[in-house]
Amino acid sequence: VEGGVKITSVNVGGMAFRQGKTQVNNAVSVDEKDIEAFKKLNARGIELEVRKVSTDPKLKMMDLISKIDK
Image (cartoon, rainbow, N blue to C red; front, side, top):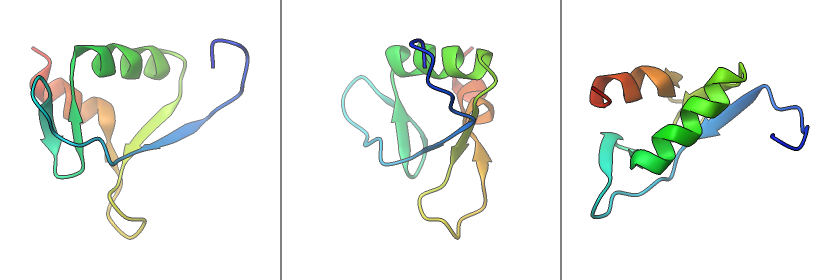
């Protein structure tokens, strides 16, 4: 993205929980580095959606992060 690749949307999933990460839903766990990366992508206007499978309702990654990033 920083090199000029045009991306409009990213489906975030499969980020497993491990020590040092915080679970934001059943498919995604994040740490501070992940949060900073998502904030940078969001600032570029890239939609960050969370779905474990394509039939799941779309959740906004930044909404999930805002619940834990205080």
